[in-house]
Length: 227
Image (cartoon, rainbow, N blue to C red; front, top):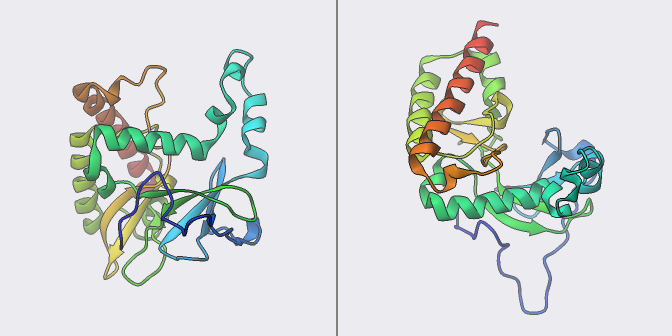
């Protein structure tokens, strides 16, 4: 796949803006979280587009905060803009190695549902969209192939000091080849949530924090595997 800037869309002819994607409605989303819906990019199935849910727009989220937090700029409450900001920090602090563990992004594009963030869509070798770690564990349990892939993921995540909030099973996808896990990719909740995110500048602290997030993930995996 051709590499693209993580913070800007691919080039368009002079004086021509990006083409508006027609995504249909919310029922066409292949996945969704608390704040966003995910659609396959109709112009390139190697990418998806993340759209803010109508009830989780920046004004909605700002109104939910206590008065002091409401003083922050409106863009602070836009999950797509915040993700771009996190990726810029990833580029500066970690660089290319980060994209073995998270998808690339390609900037904002217009859609019929409003501005959307274009992100690499993780697929298996058969072309199917990779399933979440939660779905994989439900179907297959913690099998030997997943254990090996998980060990590789944990080692690299901690070594790089990757920034994240809690690592949740539904925010990680399992990429497969020949129906065997080969890679885990964190598709949401990337970036430190600390008031002062020292992990971006202090590598030992970042690795310590990453290790704590992995311990939390291990507990979730164990609980899911017992079901």
